Every structure is written in C-alpha cells, then in structure tokens.
Length: 79
Image (cartoon, rainbow, N blue to C red):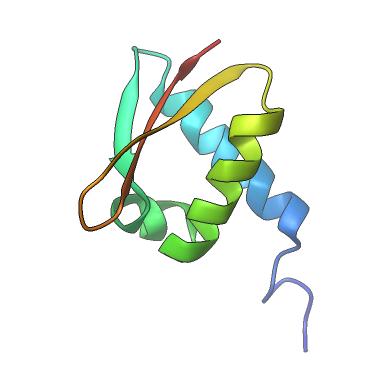
C-alpha cells in the first residue's frame, strides 16, 4: 500500500485549508461538504471532521457551523 494513495490527515487538512483560503479571497463562502468533496479529494464526512477542527484551530480563517438542512452548511471567511 502506497502512502500517496491515502494522504495523511495533516496533508488533507492542508489541502482543505488551501482550498478554503483561495475561495474566500473574494469574500465569505457558504458550502456543504458534499458539494466540495470532489474538489478536495475527501469524503463529506472527512470534510465535516476537518471543519470542526479548523473552526477551533485556524487563525487565518473564520469558520462557523452555519446551519443544518440535510447536511451541515459551513460559513468561512478570512479572519
């Protein structure tokens, strides 16, 4: 089994943070994990877990669990 086939949690977190940073350059972003899963190469469940972690640790992003309708909607903007 190759390590490139299953990226570490750290690289997944970095990939998600980079994606979010780029998307919030023009303002705030609202999204559901299932709609960005293909873009970041993660499952919606992985994205949800990472977003909770980012909401507590990211200093350059403001992350808010915004609403829940069939899946969590996240609001992200630059801090």
